[in-house]
Amino acid sequence: MLDYLLLGLLQGISEWLPVSSKTVLFLASSFLLGKGFAESYDLALALQAGTIASAILYFRSSWMNALRDKRILTFLVLATLLTGVVGVPLYLFARRALENAINPAIPTLSVAALLAAQALVGHSSKAGSRRVENVKALDSALLGIVQGVSSLPGVSRSGSTVTLLLYLGFTPYDALNLSFMASVPANAGALVSVLLFSGGLLFENSTKFLAAFAVAAVTGYFCIRALMKLAREHGPALTGFMATIALLVGILSLAGA
Image (cartoon, rainbow, N blue to C red; front, side):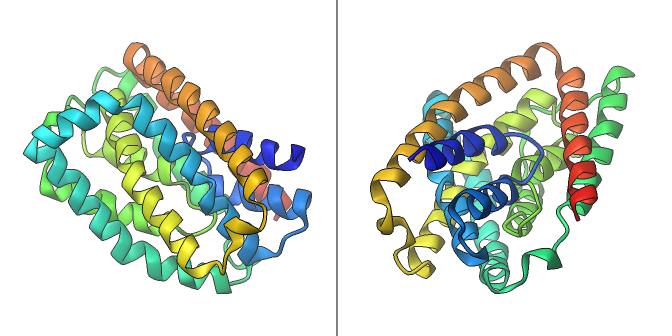
């Protein structure tokens, strides 16, 4: 049971940082549970159910507003559709690919460099000023494609989507807001894919999985809360912090590879 609780803790933290939670969970489940690539990858995606609950709970008022705001609702729907179109084929490919065929250091270091550049822009008082209510169809299309690509191991959904939104001119707070809200339908789709293609993985250890789910949900909620507070009060500093995390993880991944 302890090993599953640790997996839930890792998921609750890594999902919202610019590192690949799938890769973190894959490595942890391989080491702790002795599972092969496909099973570990499926378990990593399945535990996103916990962080779905985190985002729904934290953004509950924003979701209610989205149902009344046609522009935001369209953004979420279009982004989710494109995520599925791009992400499902990549998921099926990744389950059959060798893990060492995708070096997680490369996308992680790329995100680190882009976030570092954004942090410098923010400190020079030229940060973006776009808000959630200013979303456009192009924003949702680009986010959906990037989210779909993040279904590959080694590619961070949060890191890549937040970076994209920052470069589209959104403030750090609104970039996190849109990225984290968009994670709910995207991760729900990933969970459905696992249920369809994993052959009953989640039902083999349902009690342990539910315990990991609960830990991921609680941990994820407090991580979102802390990051959103930092983004509201110290936007450029948060961007620099996320760049540092991505850089460190990228270097460690490169060394490990």
